[in-house]
Image (cartoon, rainbow, N blue to C red; front, side):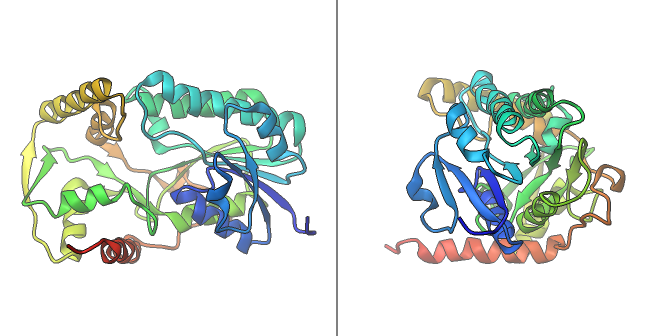
Length: 318
C-alpha cells in the first residue's frame, strides 16, 4: 500500500461511481472498492474487496484503515418495496455499522437522492430516506457523516439517460399537463467533485441537495425540447393527464410482476415524474465556500450527447 490516504467506495463500478473514483484518485486518494465481480474493477487502479452490502465481513474489510468512506451503491430498480429496502436501507445500515466499529474517525459521505425529500411518492424514494435514517442511527447524530441528495445526474456513461433521448426524439412527445413539473439536473463530474471535497473537509452531520446552478430547474417541455433541439429535432408535445401516466406506471408494474423483472418505470416512478417541484435553492445546497457546481446544462448536454453518439458508432451496422 502506498503512503496515500485511503478512501473506501461502494458503487464504484457504476455510472456515477466511475466519475467518483476518478475524482478521488485525482485528489490523491488510494481507492479501495467493494465489488461483486473483481473483474469489473480491472480497468481501474482501485484495490478490490469482493462482496456486497449484505456481507458485514466484507464491509469491515472495505473500511478498515480508511480516512473516508463514500457510499454510492444502491438499487434504482427492483421487483418491489422489500427489495428496495433490503439494499437501500439495510445495506446502508450495515455499512454505517462497519464504519462505526472499524473506522470511527473516517468521514462518511452518503449519496442519497432528491427523491428522499418526498418518501411517500414511491418505494424507491421511501427506501432512500430510510437508508439515510438507518445510517445516521448507526453513527449517531454527532457522527462524522454527511448526506448528499443529488437530483437527476447525467453525463458521459449515463445509459439510463438514453430513455430521455428516445423520448425527446419521438414523433409525439407526451408531456404532463399544467402546472408542469420542475426538474433540476446535475452533471456527474460535479457530483463527483462534491464527494471528493467532502472526503477532506466541509460540514458534517447535515443533509444537502446537489444540483447545478439552475436551482429552479427546467420545465418538462423545456428540458425535452432542449435535448431534441440539440439533436436537430422539433418535438410535437401532447398533453397527457396524470391519470394516464399513472395507469401506464401501474401496467408496467403488473408486467414486472408477471416476468419477475423490475424496470425503472412503474407507478412509483410515474409519481416521481408527476411531482411538480423538484427545484432546489441555495439554502439547501452545500456552502458556496465548500463546493459550487461548475458545469451548466448546455455544456453538460453537449458532453452527454457526444458520449451517446459514441455508443451509436459502436453499434453493428446491418
